[in-house]
Length: 329
Ligand code: UDP
Image 1: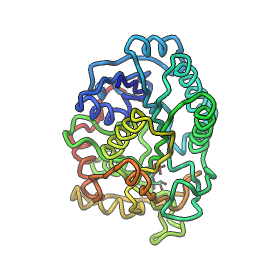
Image 2 (image 1 turned 120 degrees about the horizontal axis):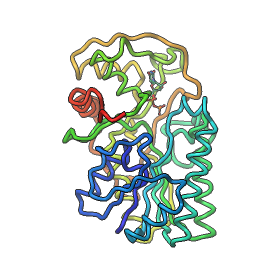
Image 3 (image 1 turned 45 degrees about the horizontal axis):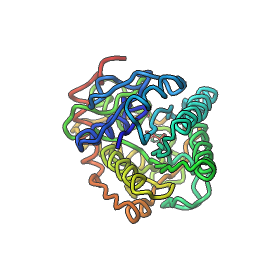
């Protein structure tokens, strides 16, 4: 296995790379460092490059004898995608199409693709299984669905073998504490809550308390980043075993409201968090809870972090020890 990881300096990418490297796999990280962090890359091979740079991509594939790709490099913020759709279609769709062109040209036909629960939109039922209808309510989800559809067509016509992993809410940090979540600007709930605990923010805004949920705030399925990382490795192994293209959800199967997450963080940190009710955020569905039965059944995925407080504890350790993240942005 010689694996190219685009976006390997980002949050989920860096955790996957660290795990692959620990397992002794040959990994090359390819990242333009616009969002990613050089210090997050815990493997010897790093190429600073953009997915639009076909020449550099091709050089990397040839130089490292790449035979599979894990493609994380993308923009992934729901709110931003509603404000700047052009940026999202360009990077997530055109950029990925370019990567696929280079892969096919160089006969690299195994791909693990970062997709998202946002492809479902307001789900017709929960827990969400992979087969329900997909009506994304935000641009981010639309760009990922477009690419899933393109890969399905490429799979049929060009022999591409891909596994798309639809993440629910990635969170937490590696238990060794050397890598974690560092986005700028930060928009995700758990890091924002923990930054509030650290006094870096005045208060946490709750985006809407009039949803049709038990306490009026949105319900999400929070999944530990190392459980996600493990799923990528299982997906890669499946592709090397010759399995067919497929799509899997990755979640915990438990839903927590925004208020419940804040309460859990208060318990973990022992700090009282100041909250404010704010308007709804555009593009947010009320409830997203995964059924991950398919990947458990077919790839033997077995998430280790099922307790939300344990997950928040790992994130808290990272944020407490790295109040400025990697300190490079
Ligand atoms: N959220 C919130 N306040 C914040 C950030 C997020 O109330 O400052 C809510 C958001 O509306 C959503 C949930 O927390 O219902 C998770 O949002 P996040 O951005 O972490 O992940 P997403 O669900 O967008 O992938």
